[in-house]
Length: 312
Image 1 (tube, one colour):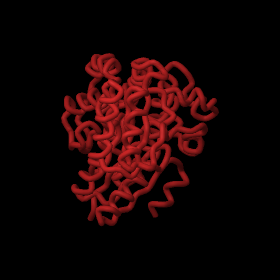
Image 2 (tube, one colour):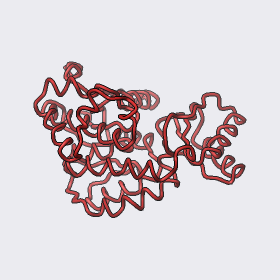
Image 3 (tube, helix red, strand yellow):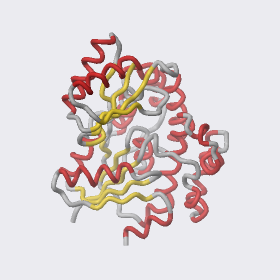
Image 4 (cartoon, one colour):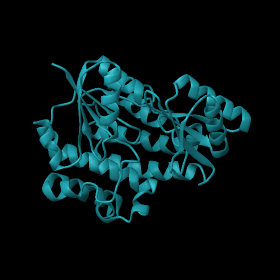
């Protein structure tokens, strides 16, 4: 029998109304929102339910909102879902994964990701940094385009998210990102788009945020997880509390190696992927990467009570 991986989404999967149906249907989910409101000192629950969208999109609000929604799903449905052999989360989602596998408490995680969001936002003034998606090019070609962009602009641009085969996001100084996009076009790249984000996440420009978050993460108690985590920064199986903490520190300025994460999970025999929280991006990526590898898998997105029926 194949193994099970729980996947947790990151920033970009938020929307006004997120988790509302789940909160209405499940007392355990409502309890998560109450804990979040108490820990943060403001009504995150109201912001998630009612918006406004522009306020929800602020990084310091988005990150705890997505963590809360994922934690609501686990708290409400965890006993009804296949137990995970592995867990992984995309960027911010790594915190959700650690809460789900009991390596971090929800209270510690929700206050930490709010601070993480603030630190990442203030690390680079708005307009100085940028991110862009480059589709349909190999990792080697994208890396070459980034090198050309850096050399031409004298600024920093690097691959930031290796999301799947031919789906790579770059990040850095705005002018360096533009130069890298031009280099990619010259190399035959056709699908290039700037992303509507306010900071160059997962790039060396996040070093101030990493320095800020290091002592905060050092002060948090990590426990042994219920199952191994595949972390972002190494795409490696991790179970030791010290290594779990170290991965969260390094992922702030390090690339999200999601394609390698999925490859490792497939190699480990995972045939069922459950994306827990808002959105369907990760379950979609899992299906596509497995298909390209010639492996048959099931992948489901579970965000509300209506989604449980998929599992039969």
